[in-house]
Image (cartoon, rainbow over all chains, first blue to last red; front, side, top):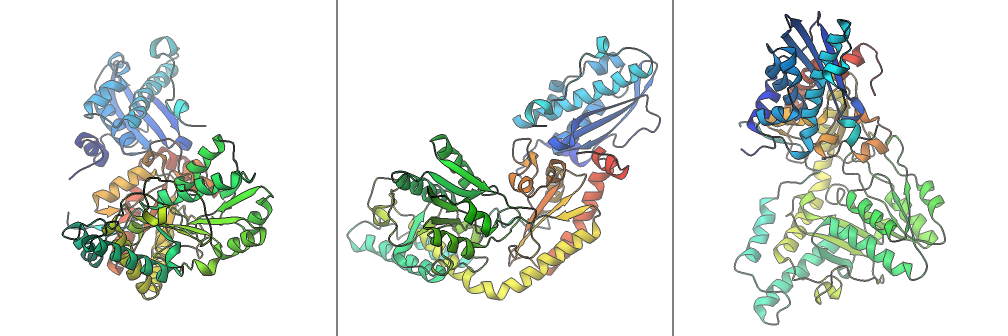
Length: 145
Length: 396
């Protein structure tokens, strides 16, 4: 049967991994805006410099939910440095591609992970900017706020 | 997939088998060109003439007021562009319309605006209805045309067409209505509703795609949109879509004759869906007037969920529906219709449009009421927006 999204997007959309929140999270990051139709919220737990656990909550379209889901799988168990290297491009590739106007969802996933790590650093009393870089909301460019 | 519920009849409808049957000869052995002199061509000519008579009978217009087109969009473009062009020569360069028209109208108006025309778009208020007094107040000495849709495609609200038409007559201004969502679904009376031009599209009333009509009141002369031949009395060139035209007429005849019979049960099922969903799902609201709406249309917003993910999960359950969410449009802005009735963006993203038809059964309604609420709850369970709502935080 023909479908709009790739099989991988549909798989992660219908059976999202790591859904929910972490009560005792070490870092929480949120990117997006309800007005633009998507918000991603990432919760991370850090142990010995590794992302020991990760959960997400997402308000958004199918690809927003799928990118959040696969992104959590891609950073779980990885070091913070590795997690920071996760690019939106890698997320798109792992999903077997996204329709052109859905690429911003993958940027949301990348940025929400960076936002959670930035929050973790802040809680440790470390200035996150030199380590994480400037965060940006992709919706700001394409949605009239 | 074992279940299939088609609840997107505002997008398109199932072609009736009887309609296809009437069309088939003209797609196969009766392929003559209606403009040809020999009887093989004249057979097709006769079928088109009969179709024109049928349309005239169903719409209460004269047969020479019916002009077949490629569909509703062409009819809208033609009516608006050519009225604008013709009356601009008399110094009339102002057009009145509404903010929630179909894009076939709005984008045409935008193009005219760039060419120096002045456009006034009337508000539609929270109930999604144009006010007749607003039309009256908007008309100026240089107004050439008022174009207001008969029924809205997203929220189904039915506009006060005869009253708007009466104001236009009184003021000496032409009145066009995009009746694409209305024809075949509610009574539409061309001669009795003070309408000068009316657009319709066959596939919205169980006919084929790619064929529609513009009704033009007798005596109105304005230029053609498509030049190149003597078809449609020289006003719309191009070899006639004989099969499509025959199909349009037969579908119109069928839907208009069954309308009285199916409308009460359609309204009953629609209202059972509306009330059932509003009862079962907290923080949901009906968009558009509850009474002055198409018998088969319901449009509900669910706070804290996003429409596209809702549609995908419904599709997974074999249910075809539609949403005004941005994600379904390719931009990040939700439907202009939902914004026009004052819905905040965040709530407009969570809208669901179900448009049922005479095919929809009581069992389908039961299934929809059973399937939709758990899907909403599931999406809300991991929605950060819903989390904010339940905590009483601001989220828009």
